[in-house]
Amino acid sequence: MRIVVLGGAGKMGCIAVQDLAGDDRVDEVVIADFNLENANIVADYINSPKISVQFVDVNDHAGLVKVLQGANACLNATVYYTNLQIMEACLEAGTHYTDMGGLFHTTLKQLKLSERFAEKGLSAVLGMGSAPGIPNIQSRYAADRLDTIEYIRIYDGIKPPAPDDVRFTYAVPTIIDELTLSPMVYRDGEFVAEKPLTGFEDYWFAAPVGLLPMHYSLHSEVATIPITFKDKGVKECFFKINYWGMAKETVDKVNVLAEFGFAKSDPVEVGDVKVTPREFTVAMMGNYVPPIVDFLAPPKNQPPDWVKEIVTEVKGTKDGKEVTYRLGTLTVKGALPTGVAPALSAIWLAAGRVEPGVYPPEVAFDPVPFFEDLETRGIVTQVTATHKVTD
Image 1 (cartoon, rainbow, N blue to C red):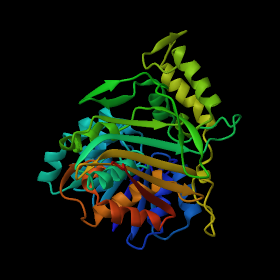
Image 2 (cartoon, rainbow, N blue to C red):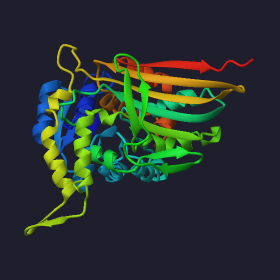
Image 3 (cartoon, one colour):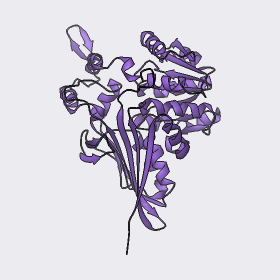
């Protein structure tokens, strides 16, 4: 199978490329990127005969379609603003599609393309990073075993860096949006907007992650999970994270900039030049992104120090008795699931394991075999079911 990774020279895209190149089911991996310098760095570092590099500008529709033609699947690892236009290109090229998330609002727009994808015999799975992605499938595992659901609570716990480590863990534009846009939670049958960096609670993750402060963040899981399982009576669904995997001190600094208007998209005049504060901020923050090879597993099977656990807690009933599921997907010195999960999604799509149409992960994928596939990458899911004892 041939898989095109758009943004394959990016921070999460390069991890997906590395995973795909190491999978026996994949014959060819195309790093399709605007930044050919980084693309060649990634290709040289991984050093696989399966990998090729192609220039692509996602704003050049005809050129994008040409790159996608003949591919069994497209893995979109670019910033989420491009999701809709890349899906349009996939429809024209006849290519299955997956991405790493649409930050809630874009995901809802993407789902509206389902009928068009189905008519073309094409499949798309939305939001298949580590989160969104893994929590959706965790939710499906629990939902399949419950008659009713009271709540679905998602916690993304990432081992925090040192306070003086001023670095960004993934796409800077997305981090700015997650920090400034209102998180959406599902409560009593409707979506409610909360303020950013609210809803704090301390949550215990598996060792070595430990106790972390968690807060609301805008995320795609909440857009689909409560709707998918609405018939089971879901009353609450939220997503929480610990400062997006960055040091709290770094987040505080970005938040101050946002309060002073540096995250706004309206141009301002500076002398004779119009400048967009947000674009300027993103450009300046690019100096605080680690080198691309820092995101790749080094040779000789010595993976980088990625430590995180993604937890979904689902409370409901089975046969009239209260049950709470806790599913924790843990990575300790293994491949980062934000790149691995979409790689597996692309493989499953290319293999024809998803029905035609556009779906969230909890609809598209059978949890147990997907977790088994993740486990071959050192990403392990543990399930605990707590039953309430009554007299």
